[in-house]
Image (cartoon, rainbow, N blue to C red; front, side):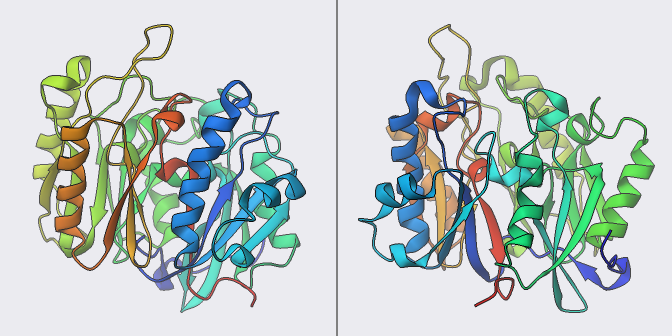
Length: 349
């Protein structure tokens, strides 16, 4: 293990703090996207285009030349940093580096990724952080935390010591089941510098493989806001769990004791796969960048418009961009799930 940062001087920045790049892991024929590869690559390309309009893009792929051909027509394609690394899948949020600062020094934390409790193969994806570090693209110090399973989509930080997470995920079997809740909370405090860990015991989306990742349900935002999925008529079987989650959020406060301002997001109308299974569409799975908020939309004019307007009100200094993510939810994820932000001053120039 590399030098371990001190918890008293460690902070996990909020997503809305200054960034240097966004990480994507590109879909290819050996991923679960093979039956709809062109459709999902088109979605990824739209995300890449939006990112390149303002910052660098890191693309992990075992097929660099093929992806270069796909992206060569994008503006600022020279700002793409390609990493030739084998991959199982494309969920960069969950196997990408979790970034912290220790006494202002950038550190990339490499936690174990076991595909949401050993549900799928992860032998390649679990090595991506280490391989990127070995390739020398980061000046941030690499810290090996492979003794603990933690996915980026399972935690939210306000940059001021508050971490928001869910019990269903962090306490689930096949992640860290040898540890109890207090022990897991202590790990978050020691390694992420958390001063207060907020646990949601309720909240779920049908079709979700992640055991209720927080980034599908409730998102911390500037001004001590929380954007969350509010139960509506379209929520169906999710209704009770989301109503109970809302009641929990109303009672929560940040690390400084300030109550949150709750901002409800609509629940999309139900979307089903070809077998009639409901897919986990959510507007909470947005990505905050330096000047934009990239929001997943689902070809639902009224719901999409309401979500975009709500998010724009919370981020008045950023441009809100809707990106159709009907392709992504077919594999049970959305826009935030395929991305991981890299904070400012983490990359070698």
